[in-house]
Image (cartoon, rainbow over all chains, first blue to last red; front, side):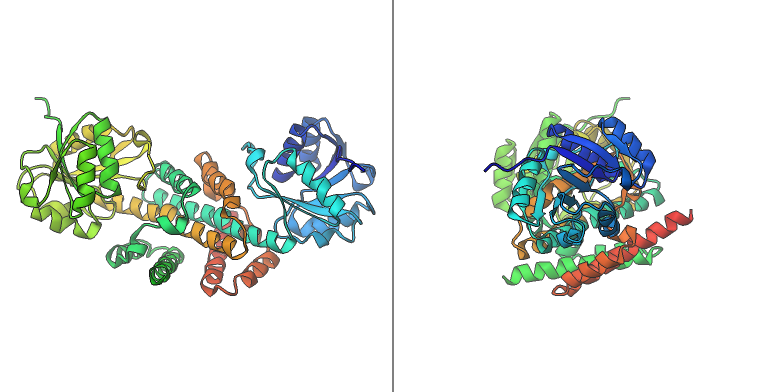
Length: 265
Length: 265
């Protein structure tokens, strides 16, 4: 018996995740039949772009789509899913830190399609290279979602909610925290009338060099050298920003500790 | 009166910085006449690669080169420079956090060529795009060094020691600290039997998206959303690593504060 494939999709949400998924689905040759969002303006625009019907309210939603894809904020997932009143249509969310179970009161058939990437408006992504993690309420739904995701990503995996949450935590470090550190540096440059652009080749290289190296193996800088003179001067430079000085101290100590551990091995 | 250009160079050091500068100098069509380092093995190898003479001791160094380029560790700069006994040949160091003055006892003509990039063995760099900051003991030496650096970089600037140190501090954030955060994430993935490779597209995208955006404008994640539920769960996940849990809390608080400041504006 061959498994029916996912052909028609309803998208709930109209933000960056919904927008990028719409692109992926179109590329996969599947049909977005409706788009609904609590932000009608962006939902209307997205519907137009993908020749989908714009649904003005949950009551206007069709009940016969093969897949309902939720791309709403984490805290809204359960409530929005319940409001769709689907019973037994396949519904998925796309969040890293939310259990698949959050959808079990909404439908007998549910799951997760979690793309490990950050999506911004107007920044195109290469879906083929994005790792996509699948979880579902049954083996059949797992297979369906796996096949579906494989149409746009070349890196699809089955993964439990528990493990997905750990990946999401690691993603918070390498995306949210790293971006915040970029913004601290941007501020520092501004305060000294220096262009943030000067740092951009270094930022790119720092990311690119770990594509083929373990970051622990290529750590450099005053902290790992134990260069107390430079560290002291840097902390002095940061005296107007006690928060940043504290962060500097804290990270330097952690780097030094990591190095001591490594040398003991 | 036309300024004599830098044609012959002696390199002191044989590590990653010395190696990458050798490549830059060769590309610029200038001649490395000698290489000296306290690590004779790597100095010999580098000499061979660039058809330069290998100097076994400081006493073997020629006194007539147009430029002596020091690429040694920060703390060794002054001592090594003095040991060369140059008096009035142009000598430069290449460090971000060391004042140009550190060389004034070594020669009447001194300066700094600071490339804002991280250099690793076997990872080629695109010198044209690397910002290079120049400082020198006189207008004439400034001009000489500026012209010399412009042969390999398209982004050369005059900059004081004070400002260069601020750039170096920002570089510690976007390179050393970011790399450390990558290593924390790598560890996290390992502990959960997940491949670090999964994070690589996200790491690259996080760097690439700030090429055209201010990082402060595109901050995402649980901290900026004030998503206490997810933050609490993440801190629980990190309970085996109190250091990492603390770092998570600290960065999340800083992101939240930054956001509050921004909204007040």
